[in-house]
Image 1: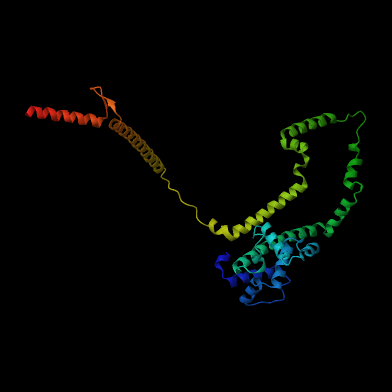
Image 2: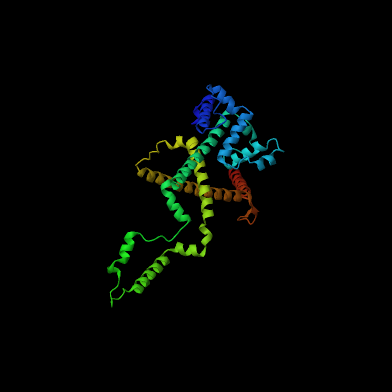
Length: 327
């Protein structure tokens, strides 16, 4: 990964990738020192901008066309803004991250962006090579007669072995010989085809909506899938691979441990519910006692008093009775 490399080593690797992709802007430089490579790739310059433009054109051949360049000539940062917009489409940077495009950001960020763009270029080169190989095979010398036959079809004479079978006396029906029941065979085949079509729901759906799987929609879906796979592949190689190499966690085989924990939790919940009921009962008793002490009530004497007043009166009566008894 790029995080374990120094800036000079990182720049050397990106420079080697440019040479491997036959970038014409670095073919004649013959740089040997890593400091020179780092200065070329991370310091603002016209050559660095040309290298970025070359990479963007390799990814998107329509990038930087004459019409677009004439429209962007009025804006001095038009080319950089277009590169940033392309980077945002590829989910590599933000559209307003012009410092990264101009070479004013940190070397690690610049080299990371260049490496990601070059990985996309390498992928497109591989696909182009496959297409060129297929075209070479199709237009090979031994296949040219078949191509001419496809472009200019004609009713050629039958081969010799077919003519021999056709002209053989065994193929001529004898007088009085009846032909086989061809209509019965055709009717049986038609019935089997109808049964097969009734079992294939997707064929009926295709007749009702023939444009659902048109070639253009399939091409668009395949392009989106390819772009997402390339993005995920790059993300996996740069960030996720180190985590995927870890060993999976080991789980304990003692399943009764979870049962004991569940029982303890249930007992704890029961005890908490009992504590809650005790607290509620204590609160009700406290309110009742507080009501007896503060709210006046009727007593045996017919007077309405609070409990403390009634107790004080009783205490005074007891004292009076005790004093009278002593006298």
